[in-house]
Length: 175
Image (spheres, rainbow, N blue to C red):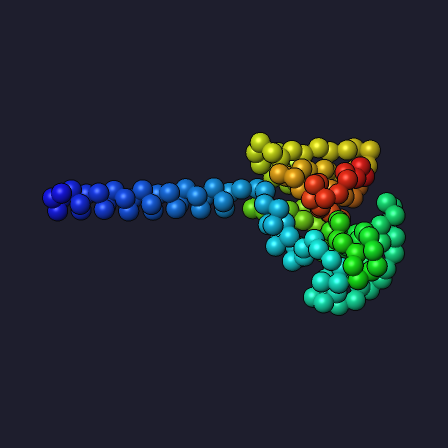
């Protein structure tokens, strides 16, 4: 091969790689949804054992029982719905976020977001994502590639808290 052909192929390859990088980066930046691990990363929490959460965040401020009979560990910025075994071996089933510090996705949806913000973000998210609004309960429900999210709204349509869980590991809650 001549030097000119090698040079031309090198330049074309570099252009393709750089273009591909920017296309992928743009796609990821504009995605209004997160992967399963992305929800946990954004919240700073993870499903697993409650004992792991205690190691990271300390003892909860309060323990209670939720409306589904699950043990509820209440922290300042979040709540964990626990299931099974002893407290130390209980698995985290549902994570409820009560702090405006935790924001999700490109549109930074969270406590303080409006109903319109939620609908806008999750209605354009793609094939495996959908959003519904229940006027009776004032809750927006979103499903995002296996993650279930429930956004609880006040009378003005502002998120006061939201929860999420992996549908494969938990039954669907109808708020």
